[in-house]
Image (cartoon, rainbow, N blue to C red; front, side):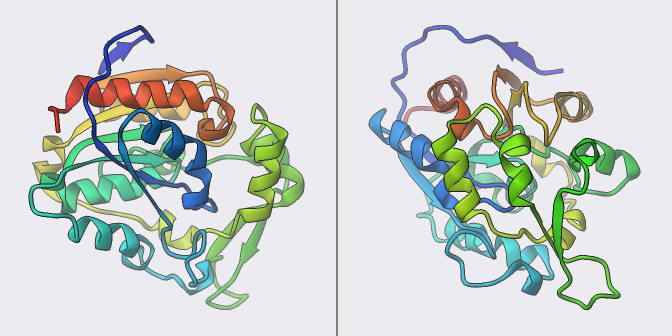
Length: 270
């Protein structure tokens, strides 16, 4: 198990480049508070829309491979100057993209930070992986609106939480203004692609330092699931944040505090 870290005052003198990766149905837009606060603290911030998300023109029902979904992130990292390294931050299902990028671009990543995120070393390879990493929202009833890009007789290719459930499931501790923003901007996410995510690059993944930020009031990736993933693949540091599934809305100031602390204690000056 990694080191459990409690919030405490410390000097923040390191300036870094944070790359923020959203979860399913969200987009670069969801980081607007975090981007502003990190930039105010002197950091560089890049927020990306993955395939079929945000203002990306593709649709989740037209995305059939994880390569398609992750292409904006991989293109971005590939284009970084040779001596540039980033702190890669993933929320929710964005943790899958962060892990895969750590395999492919480990030499470009100082630190991988998972926020209430799916953190599985090899993706979904076993029943246990699905148990720990896939949301179980059955307590709320029939919450998903599904898309069938391969035809009605095939498994669903996309999913989005119905509008009437979004505030209760995703944003129960968030300001009404932000849950309203989410209801306007959420898009169907590529369910089939995410649940078929598997990757294995060997021990190279262990060269990328990892931090996990637990979200204690999370209805999506529940605290028990987070703890199981942490136990199975221990990160070096673990933080705990009182938050719903979306701390970029419900607790942005403390989330930024933890992001900066994680980076300051791990990464060299830039």
